[in-house]
Length: 435
Image 1 (cartoon, one colour):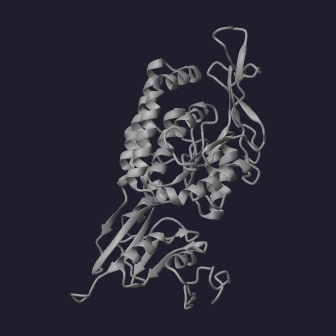
Image 2 (cartoon, helix red, strand yellow):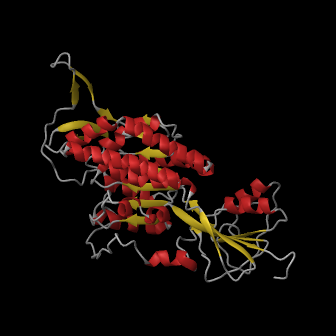
Image 3 (cartoon, one colour):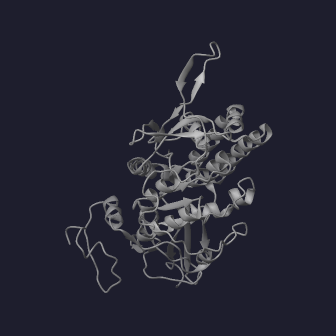
């Protein structure tokens, strides 16, 4: 075959059909192998072990056999990438599909009388109306109390820069008293697509960075955030009406969480699984790619940090929707990103209606996973919209039981499982002793 776009090459054929393509370089061979919407398994044949491992790492499949094929064992994980599905059969990885962490109570999901084809198709806010002043927010000069300065209007953030929304519209953000404190950009589908494009542009380079390099950036984020401790706490206090001590505690816990996930950048990378094979079966924990995240309204700063930090420390890029009611802590964090050597496109922030933007992320075919922490209706929408493109989802079904300040609830192993996927690489032996 001369062209890799024929119908015999693209579908997932289980046999007995062999598709043969020629290639000039190893890189071209990897590109041909990844030029398919499926990714169940592959085999690599070569005498050079270092080359075999590099190709196995580059192929977007769930199982790779080196100088062998179709070797399976009940103790080893087996499953696919992309449209070959997610989840695994065999080994401990298979059990994860049937269990939940002890803190995540199994919700009782009742049938919802919702038409998901029309639910959240417009950016109209689903929040209850809160009475407040209609005047645009402004900062009054301390020198002359009657002369206002510039309006406090926040933009979107993707591709390493602040951008105006495609709709050219904003929404008012109210504090705990109902007073308008800021205007934030109202994102739409076009903004989501732009952010996903920026994330995919940055994803290959970020995933290939060393764990040490990713850790240093997260440590730098924590240090720069700590320098603005008083400023961030003051904003939380005035925005949500919490006590000063509680606001400072949320900032301190957010800094601690960044240090915690920075330390995990070189951990949870995989294990060597014992099987009946005379050789080694290595389970690599690889990044998913681009992860969409919708943040809750509770603890808007701590939940924002707790969700994006584990995703990027394991090599993913994120498109994140901050709290719909209190997005300012996340949007102010843009200044911390810009001063902490975070490469462009790693973290992309789109503010607006949580359910409307989540729908766009869930329906996007080039987003590998979607996390949603919001309403029961929104959780159902994300799972419904993700079914057509086989996207991994993690939703809370509207159950407000997540204690973000708890070390297990807010930074447990479940986060590492949700931001990685398992690849099994089989390496048989037998040159000296018989197999």
